[in-house]
Amino acid sequence: MLLTGRKHVLAIGEVGHVFRDPAFARRLWNPDPGKCVWDNVYSLRGYRPSWP
Image (cartoon, rainbow, N blue to C red; front, side, top):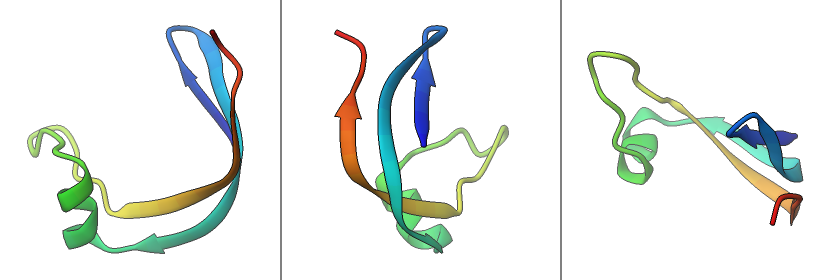
């Protein structure tokens, strides 16, 4: 998985586990409910930053 931002690849990692749990996702993130609601949660293995 490539994690991007600011028009750059910021980190690289392998997806470890994926699950859908809206209540748990809301505890992790506080999105704007008018724009989106995040349900998916995933873990990363071998996370490696690629941008200083």
